[in-house]
Length: 367
Ligand SMILES: Cc1cc2nc3c(=O)[nH]c(=O)nc-3n(C[C@H](O)[C@H](O)[C@H](O)COP(=O)(O)O)c2cc1C
Ligand code: SF4
Image 1 (cartoon, rainbow, N blue to C red):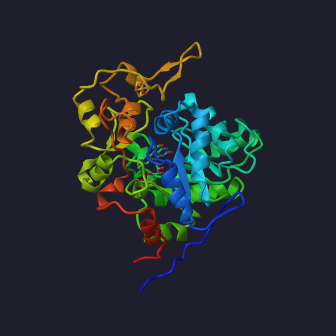
Image 2: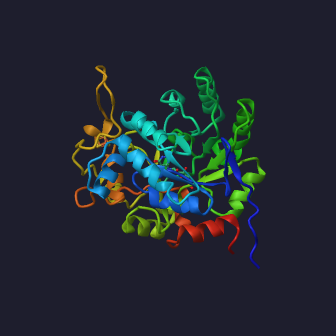
Image 3: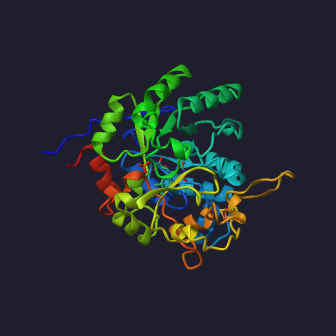
């Protein structure tokens, strides 16, 4: 017999999201408007990723656009069929942060979710009006720091995403802290929930390793208000990962999923990958000659110019994440090898399904 969903809506800044499932932002180019739109149609919150969005939209449309225009366009397209959608803007992409925020806000985005660093100045970029601002944290301490800084700016988070160490992409933990019992999502949630209550009682959304309907109900019964999921949505028909990437996810076994670190991400955070990813294999052999031609993770030098990325000259400790990830969404696969990031549960994926089928499963409507 089919069971009916028991999941309660998630309300963020007055927006009632019928299904409390957020499809996590997945850069580079994995979660674009086709995926976000499909999730929104099913009642969840669909998120586009802002990473390298100028290049991705320029290539798709054949018209050169800048970051502001690309964020505006992708957000607008994601909202076309209704429902709620948002954008994920990573702090680590410092150079394009402000333009991404402005483009998304001007397009009337429902939410901005921001992590990979603490988004301490997010509310100061431009008045967010109806847009909800949501930081991603990995600890109660990080949330405390953000709340204190945002209070000075006259703002309070509209919700928070708590991401544990089983997630895909960059991880907000030191490499030696990933396996600690105290850093399990189940153990991180109570103090973060307490902090959210203390800072003004906003929703707490948990992420990292959530895979089934019963995982969702478990965390909701522990006090979470919703979940954010990446890997399950990566493995959908609507995600913009290349077919080769999706098949690598289907093939991946438990032992194939590793946390890359030296060589690792030039953003300085541990980064989970499939160990057979062509760029990762080459980087272990230090094969790729360092070359910087994309520049998304550049930081400012002493003169205030964006010139610094550790992967520019060092292929011992870093891989060129811009090119590896752009290749894995089909931007430049003929020139650069692909790098496949996944969550720790990717080994459980055995086929690529539609967003509708996935949402029916996750909400408990099917099976
Ligand atoms: C392919 C992929 C790309 C990701 N890219 C980003 C990103 O650009 N920004 C971000 O904040 N999180 C990113 N994440 C993290 C997801 O948004 C999500 O929080 C996380 O994957 C949840 O864990 P799960 O994959 O176990 O569901 C990415 C995850 C994956 C799998
Ligand atoms: S070296 Fe590579 S990863 Fe670093 S900014 Fe340049 S293109 Fe990006």
